[in-house]
Image (cartoon, rainbow, N blue to C red; front, side):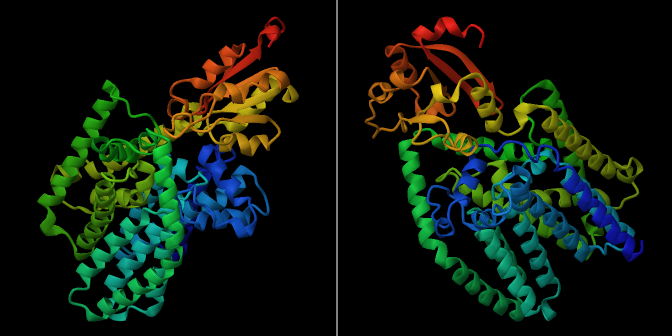
Length: 515
């Protein structure tokens, strides 16, 4: 295939990647996204004051710059998530080109399948649309691994430019997510292993490591403040650990399941179990075939399997081990290995050659087609099923204030402030009663006393059940409202947000039959 045609194919794959990320791109911000834009909307001098968000500042600064032009959901997500996902695919294509020239049929076939799988995976589409740093982390991971492979393949001619670019990509990752050190450690160990007998690379690695340490050191004090704030949150909110992570026994199977099935719920139904069993058997056959024909592997194939396996296994295992102490591992937080996951499956399925049944029945292509069908099914579910989409705070606010007059209505939160999604879309128009963490051992709030004035000023109270099992497990808010004479007259629910209970004064009940 001519070089121009090869470049045109890459453009088509990138365009497809963009196209599949357009549906729902302008949907409502969910809690964390709303908190992100609220923080990034502050003055420039406050942009590094992010103790309450356990993330480095790169996305905050990026969002601050682009929000000067527009605060539309699609615009902010475009720069914070969609464009990084496009760069991710491009970087994977470049990486594959180091092993198999993408101007030849073999390379073209590989990048086509990898491009299709990355473009259509619903989990990756979901987080490629989210104004959080997950997409950035995947991008920096792919770029830095591409440069690592360039270094070890051209160690005799490894230029300062490649080393400096690798330092920049690693620092980009470190300033995007606190899980990126697991990527850095895996790359560092891999380079140490590969540079054992290459003094030129060894010296470069030492100098580059020093540059990375110096580059991230200025942020260390802020990281320590964030760590203390996070520890205090865990004390104030018993049970918060269960929200941000899953049990250790479930984390690795859950991550693998989400990588394959995407955003859909992984329920232990017969259909899922049968499909998972079939895929497991197919993948086991593929791995067995790889082992059996290992003597036929080319140098490029051996290196590709080694790099991609290392990329997947080492950072995930490290994150899993750390989670015994600090609950950090979730599928979205280890998405930086997803491109390696699909790349490894693709090259195993397409590159291995044999005259037996493996090729006779086109077993490798059957595996790839199966993954693509699952991806398209998961993507369709994401587009059509609201329960797989983000929390609809925008729709909730519109619905509530269309039913209950703004001047007669107040919102009640068992939280120190209104939830970020409500704050962003309400813009402070609705009076709120913020009661703090009622589950905290240090809480001394008299809920009944705090709500006494509401009876004099408002006719309706909107009580948010969002996070209630954690912030108000004893249901003190509802008990206090009942003791003050308020009556529940209905509830409003939106996807992801759950129920908002509506309370009214007793004398208003007869006039609400039409609502």
